[in-house]
Image 1 (cartoon, rainbow, N blue to C red):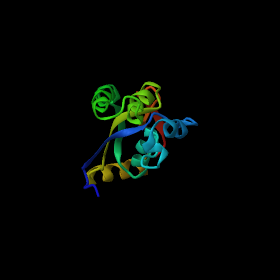
Image 2 (cartoon, rainbow, N blue to C red):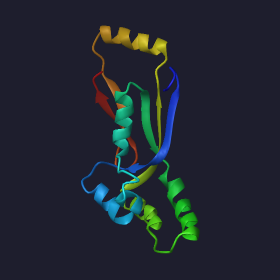
Image 3 (cartoon, rainbow, N blue to C red):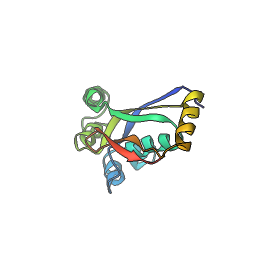
Length: 144
């Protein structure tokens, strides 16, 4: 549950897009995907799900360049040189998986009232931030 005006923040790894074969590629290189512990969720699906739930300002920012190199250096000390955990960096470099900070805000009651008044007036078109496969946000027009 998120209080009105509250912020949701999730930091995790997601697929960069929903291109065919992403889940199969991950399962072939990473045991955690092969055994079902992790599931290949595209970051755009997470951002869109938060927006559909009524949260505002939904966005995802890639922080992979600050995560994967350090992760790989650490895992090299605790894993076999050819162990599957070393493949996280590989799938990141291939553009299949990235690490993101996903944020969204639950509107405060006064924001909801203003939005309702705007909907009763002229039709409006908003913008939603959508992550591209390059990890950059691209605005997309959406009707409320």
